[in-house]
Length: 322
Image (tube, rainbow, N blue to C red; front, side):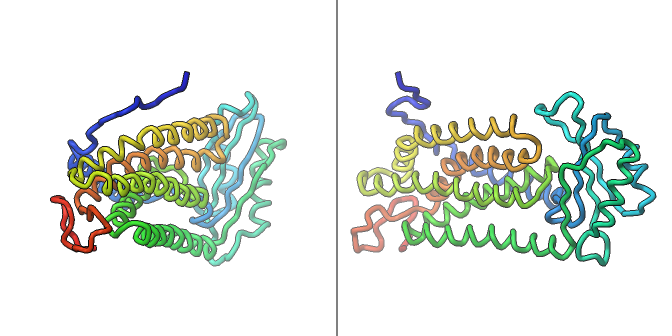
């Protein structure tokens, strides 16, 4: 017996409330943008500059004691947070100590790191330091700029690819859906104040690729059905196309989510931010390929038969000369 997430010959009307879905998406984007402006992002050591020291001790983490031991060093802003993970042993107490970049220093001095470790070992002589990451202020600024350029270039390249493969209406719908996914992902990280580092940039680029793959599959079917059903309204053709690809879309999303949720639960706190971004991206990418990209295509309209030379051939949803 085969597992079916979607029954055969589905006929769901995805555009019965198309304006409502677009309105919800726009509202979420406004909330995400407002959260970014008000709260900002909780930048990791990659973007903020400074030193991140991971400590491990058999004694319970006492944040006040850690801060008191480091205070005489006068290192400026210090962030200390206990790390929780179900995979840790009972006597495995882990903390993350983040020290801001020192003014005028291009990189964190090794003497500073050694002084911090020595100060923390006054609390527990057996304390170990599994990882130490240091990024200078200049490098962190360059990383922010490079990350923004990478995401922007990815979106522009996809716009160009979709424009060549389909038509400009398809390209606009796909890129607006991608922008929707990126903004909402950044917004959720701002709202929940989850650490935002280079791993999240990698997740954003992966989300862009995943989302556009799903959108292209839907658009391919739309283009086929536009030629097949020349007398049907564009709305009906879009509904038919999405229903025909719905089983594939859900199967891909569900199987991907199964792997990601396993990583989120069992993978440890080091990759948890990356995996959370991927989980959110798969969910929001699936949503946008159905309710955002296709809805924008419906609003813009598209030619019905590319073999016709008459530039006025189109639907009632848009007579646009491409």
